[in-house]
Amino acid sequence: MSGSMIFLIQALVLIALPVAVLRFCRLKGIIPLVVVQIVVGIALGPTLFGRVAPELYRTFFNAEALAPLSGIASVAVVIFGLITGLHFDAAILRNNGRGTLLIAMANIAVPIAAGFAGGLLIFVLHQQELGPGISPIYFPIAFGICVSVAALPVLGEILREMNLLGSRIGHVALALAGINDAILYILLAVLLMVVAAETSAGLGLVATIVLTPLYLFVMVRLVRPRLGQLVTTRLHNGEVRERALVAVGVVTLASALAMEALGLSSILGAFVAGAVMPPELRKPILDRLQAPTLALLMPFFFSITGLQTLVDPSSSLFLEAFIVATVVSVAGIMSGTAIAARLMGETWSFSLGLGALLQTKGLMEIVVLKIFLDAGVLPISVFAALISMTVFSTAIAMPLAWLLLRPADRE
Image 1 (cartoon, one colour):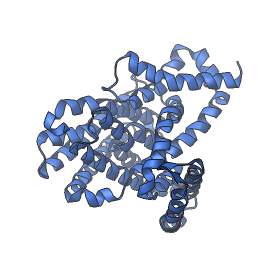
Image 2 (image 1 turned 60 degrees about the vertical axis):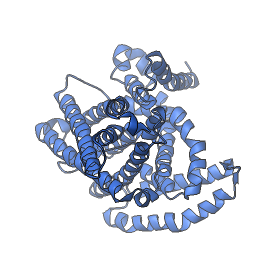
Image 3 (image 1 turned 90 degrees about the vertical axis):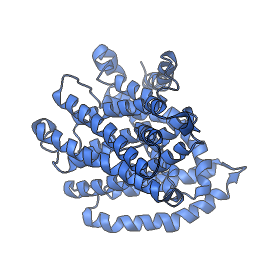
Image 4 (image 1 turned 45 degrees about the vertical axis):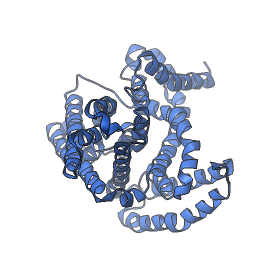
C-alpha cells in the first residue's frame, strides 16, 4: 500500500469516525464532539488498536506513516494557539467587574493549590516509577496547572449546544474561561522558562527574561497596529480575504518561532499573536479559521497524542494519578468557583452551574499536557492518566450543568 493511500485512510478515519460515533451513540447535545475526538485518538493508539490489531497498527502508524500526520498536527496546534488568543479579550477584566475577577482568582487558585498537593502526593508515593528526571518541584506545579485548566473554545461550543450563549451565565462563564486561559499561559511561560534554563534549552534564563519583554513590546507596539492596518484594508463585506489571512499566518508563525527560540513553546507565541489582534478583526478571522481547524486539523493532533497515550488500568501509578487528578480537578474547580460566586451574591444554582461549566478542558488541556510531556516535566504514565482525566472532566461538564442549573439561570 502506497504512502498516499495510507495517509488518506488515516485522514478519513480521523475526521469521519468521531462524528459517526457521536451520531450512532446518540450523544449529540450530551457530550461535546471534542471528547469523542480525543477518545478516538486514544483508541487508535497502543491502548486499543495496538493491542487488538498489532499488524495493522504497525502498518498505519509506523515511523514513516506518522511523518505526514506529525506535520499537520504541528500546524494544527499552532493555529489552535492563535484561535485561543483570538478568543481572549483583555476588556473582560474591565467589563465584568470586580466580582468576576474575584471568582476567576478562586477558580484558578483553589484547584492549583489542591493539584499541587495531589501532585506532591503522587511524587512521594511513586518517585521510582516516575523516573530520575522528574523534578519534585516542577512535577507538582505542572500537575496543579493541568487540573485547573478551563478551555474557552470548547466551552463556547458547549454553551452553543446548550443554548446558553446569550444568557448571563454563559457570559460570565466565558469571561472566567478567558481569564483562566490568560493566567494559564503566563504560568506555562514562567515554568517553561525555568525548566529551559536548567536543561540548557533555548537562550538561557537571563536572555529569556531580558528578551521576552522586548518580544512582547514589539508584538503590542509595532506588530499589532501594522497588522491591524494591513488586514483592515483587505476586509471585504466584513470578511477576511486570502492575502490578509496570509499576513495573519506569517505573524503567527514568526511569533511561534520567536517563542520557541526563547526556550518556551511555539503555542505560546501563537497565543500572543491572537491576543494582540485588534478587537474588530477577531471575529472575521475566527469565522475563517475556527471551524476548519477544529473539525479538519485538530483530529490529526489527537492521533499523534493518542499514539503517545497508553492507558493501563493495571498500573497503580496510572490509577492513583487519574483518581487524584480527577477528584482535585472536579472538587477544586467546583468549590472554588461556586463558593466565590455565592459570596458575590449569586444563587447556589447559578454558582454550582458555573462550576460545572468550567469543568470543560478539551483541546486546551491536551495542548498543555503535550507541552509538559515534550519539556520532560511529566512522565508518559502520568500524561496518560491526565489525558483520561481530561476526557472525564470535559464529558461531565454538559450533563452536570443541565442537572444543576434552574430554568431561570438558563435565560
